Amino acid sequence: MAAELHVELVAADRSVWSGEATLVVARTTSGDIGVMPGHQPLLGVLESGPVTIRTSDGGTVVAAVHGGFISFADNKLSLLAEIAELSDEIDVQRAERELERAKAEGDAHAERRADVRLRAVAAR
Amino acid sequence: MGAQLRVYKRRIKSVTATKKITKAMEMIAASRVVKAQRKVAASTPYATELTRAVTAVGTGSNTKHPLTTEAETATRSAVLLLTSDRGLAGAFNSNAIKAAEQLTERLEAEGKEVDTYIVGRRGLAHYNFRERKVAESWSGFTDQPSYADAKKVAVPLIEAIEKATADGGVDELHIVYTEFVSMMTQTAVDSRLLPLSLEEVAEESHAKGEILPLYDFEPSAEDVLDALLPRYVESRIYNALLQSAASKHAATRRAMKSATDNAGDLITTLSRLANAARQAEITQEISEIVGGSAALADATAGSDR
Image 1 (cartoon, one colour):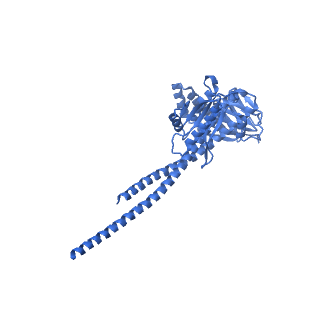
Image 2: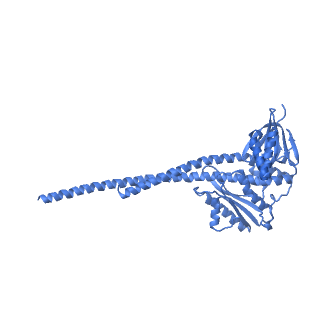
Image 3: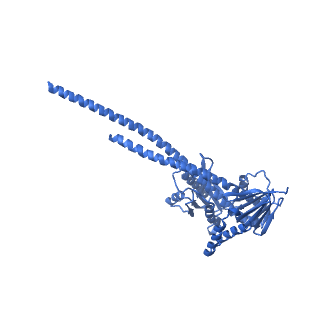
């Protein structure tokens, strides 16, 4: 069996996903980073964007993360985000509507949020 | 029905209505406490992980950051007071306000100027009535605070602490809120959020024996700390808001329970009085009839003669 790492994806008000994984790919402010079991202890600032978790049973979990942190130590990886959603929780139509509305209103914040959601769905 | 009996009956009716209302409020508060407690529990993983990360950066690097270094002579501090929007919660609000006032006094005795920030209409009303200056206030979300609310509260506070003291910024940030210990116990506490004392944080994250690994910081320790500390403050404020909400509901529940109990007692007393009044009325009526018939009998006996 391949080595595993334990992943906790937590948002400010709930725990979004937790389980075993073989690879986690996330985007930090200085670029994409992939974490595999046995990685050196790491603490980084996340960019808004999709996070891909390759679970140990071969599946893939994609989550939209809106800012936050990644920390890895002792084979335990924590993804902390103020807002985090799994891609299958995301309502695509709603996100598209949001994106259009945000573009029309020039709300850069909302636009980015909707964009991140859609990218997470696309990466699924 | 006699006048006195009527008055008792009316009072019993009104107290019964009040009792129904307080009973309903008690049950609503009880269900809200449970909900609020669940929210506190749901926010715990984020808070613990964040605290861990802050401890890791704070101890793992020699970074000097305005949010972690203590000013040699702190001259201005901010106090954030969390109260509720609505009353009917016993001493909940007055306890929190009292704690804030004690803290303010203590800080002023140390020669610091204090800016007060208030959450909740009750606390604001208290300060406005006494014409004390309030730097900023928020209300409308104290029953069910969301993370966005906590962010809203945190923004001006973080701004104030980042600003130079001479330009109206502050050196310290204190928070006064009601800690939810248990269903029966809630205590008003004050704690210093910033500057961060890492020993305290480390103690809280109950990782005392644990040796923290040497982290690789991405992009750098300073940047991580820069991003981390505002989030840490937000999450602490969020947690305090949630605890305060849970405490408020618990206090309401207790206040309403004793109101219901008192109404019950009052109804018993009033029913006894009403019964006594009814008895007295009957007795009086009997004696009136007996007296009347005796007088009548006397009169007829007299006319016979």
